[in-house]
Image 1 (spheres, rainbow, N blue to C red):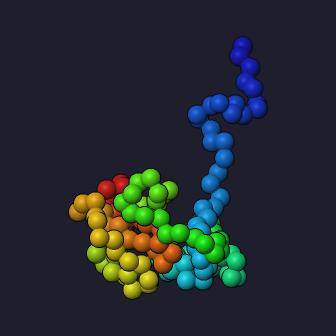
Image 2 (image 1 turned 120 degrees about the vertical axis):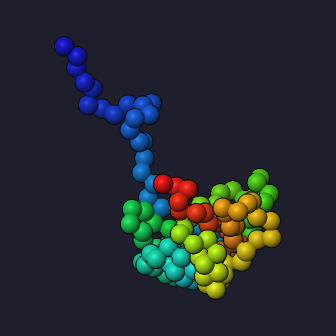
Length: 135
């Protein structure tokens, strides 16, 4: 007879050790970035002050914290960008145009035909990708 240990094994790869609750972006101002991402993701702004904003999504949240000397990440310098979002969309050009209307900017160097790289109003790069490629 084999007994099962009811205590989770922290070295096991079958069960997660943590759940992603929120990603937080740095910015010089919270409101423009909160409004931008609220429109892009369709998530409501749950909290908004000059120092901090939070959007609530279906399973986690997006935070925005004020850093007065925030420096925009560079693109495509892979060493300085830190991270970026990949967003699956149905119509690359239509969504890219809408993001630009909301305050994003399209970067000059693009990685190919199935991705469009933009910067949010605080300069964080993010990619739009064809949703069909993600199953």
